[in-house]
Amino acid sequence: MTDNPAATNDVAASLRARINTGQPHTARIWNYWLGGKDNYEVDRAAGDQIRRLHPGIGEYARADRLFLGRAVRHLVAEEGIRQFLDIGTGLPTADNTHEVAQRLAPESRIVYVDNDPLVLAHARALLTSTPEGRTDYLDEDLRNVDAVLEHAERTLDFSKPVALMLLGVVIFIGDDEDPYGLVRQLTDRLPSGSHLVLSHTVTSPTMPDVDEAVKFWNEHGTPKLTQRTPEQVARFFDGLELLEPGVVSCSRWRPEGGGPEPEEVAMFGGVARKR
Image (cartoon, rainbow, N blue to C red; front, side, top):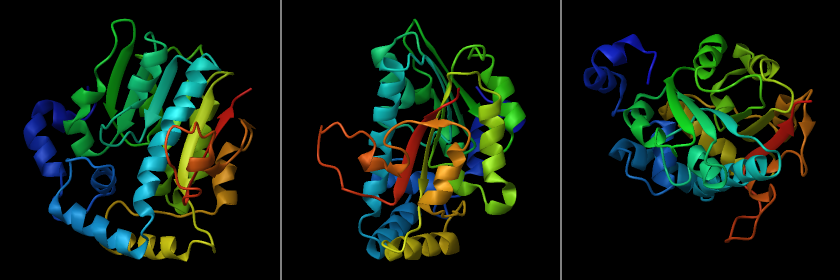
């Protein structure tokens, strides 16, 4: 399902026109690092170059994905959440939000939002659902808060708690676009008991090669990234009740010991409750 008129008039032609195979794209590189097949040679070349600049970069994708699974499982099992608004979905891979949630609570409802045409082309993989639950997909930009929420209300009941998932997406909102205000607009519209799950690449003096990798990306790839310090990432949770252990490396957020994870990655995340 999409609110993009061009896509609804002629889906195949619209998608082909929007997909730029001559320039590396972050969602496709992320897919490459996760071992997926939805990427092009230009993405693999850029991904390899970034990995040469920062050898541990590929671990971010895995750590972020494991963080998603742990956060969703906690929200379903411990907080009773049955509704998820996942913005900046990325390309479908193993253990998407609806798969993790519905495995524990088949009645869970999930709305995915992304404005990447390649994600739209694969949206059908995100629309599989248990008979008891429901999934939906919106071709829209995080910046268009009203449009996102208006569409989400067709699937989600905003009188009940919702988990807002913003994993690795706010990095694409520049400081001149009021990123904190955008996140606040979204959380303000959610009822008490809702949760924010957010992850973000960080810049730190202890990880200088990360800055080099991001610099390379911003010179060659799309969309551009904005790095923030761990303290700046924590500001996205202002006014909410942060769950333990706070905003930390994604690999350190309630690890379950199911397999080896790096001790720390430059992708920090947290989960917070709206009172």
